Image 1 (cartoon, protein in one colour):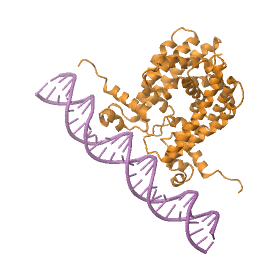
Image 2 (spheres, chains in turn purple, brown, orange, green; image 1 turned 90 degrees about the vertical axis):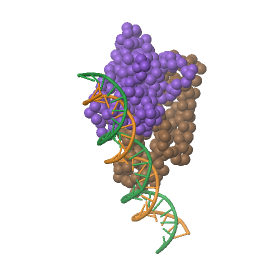
Image 3 (cartoon, rainbow over the protein chains, first blue to last red; image 1 turned 135 degrees about the horizontal axis):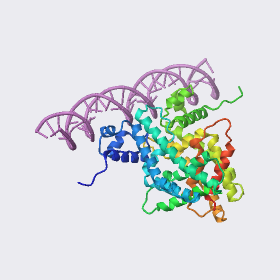
Image 4 (cartoon, rainbow over the protein chains, first blue to last red; image 1 turned 180 degrees about the vertical axis):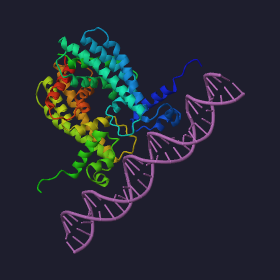
Length: 200
Length: 200
DNA sequence: CACGAAACATACTACTAAGTATGTTGTCAA
DNA sequence: TTGACAACATACTTAGTAGTATGTTTCGTG
């Protein structure tokens, strides 16, 4: 077959993300995941050093996907209001489009992790943190530009940014893929809310 | 001593909420909790039938506390904008004031729970759901009133309400009690954002 | 074809943590 | 006083799960 089937690593990532998103990270065992793939636990541990690394890979992928979707709008030359609106729309679209991956992120955001953490995992974590910082900085700069131009209210951005992202994360909690639902409608409304939340 | 010390049940609830909030529900064992209280596992299981029931009690308490703080403002006769602002402020104040309890709620929102669920727990869950529905309805009515008066934008409330609550939940993720931070400042800014998010 | 490594599968170990069974102490009412 | 019950403490059982050790098969390459 010339049709290159999805790589084993990607299959595992998909299956894991789906299972984690559905039942929760802690309630899902590696055995559970392998079972849904008609594979064995050995396969997973061959590709990922630990459960923690698997989770990190999912989270990193989620952040990267979001960055890829939103980035282009940040680097446009639109007015701050319009730019923020487009970024918000892209973010929501990302959330809905790869729902499972992003759901895992939410669950792992408050990751204390007393368990053993492999060296590899520690590296992944710092990479993720870097990506997330980059991402937040995009919103920070867009907001600062809008404030300077008098389009956005003066405000404490360390409060604004996480709250703004909360709005855009919201679909993670309640969206369920049906037939008819119009993704762009939801994205548009949430983007309206986001812009309204910071505007004068 | 006439000073009535806190009831055992309340002590357990506090210790559990604190530990759950700090390390995560799944990473915190009943033994962990009892250890922080200098008590025994038997004490906890004497007052709560299972870990699930303990969690439910915490969640219910959280919802009840929020309801108590926000309710009065809903039943005032302020204009929709002002009413929503006051409700939002009260909500944020609640989040910050009993941070541990509300953090547990967030973690349990996406509760699939394949485990055994006791009958008692099932009852608690439905009570909680009822309280939460009541709570959301307060915001729904306030928003509908504002839309009717032309103060708020026409919008899909099934999208708006969860997103609005997300803004108000935000401090749960980043607030950490220091000395100087001014709670009311944070509450005011988030309330501004909430009102702005739905206004014309 | 051979052979070595990658890509798995299978079986096992070690440990954690929820829940239980049972023992002990204090309290209060009859 | 006593007995019964609430309020704990202690010790144990047991199920589930992360991780490992060890086979087995496939496959690219010389």
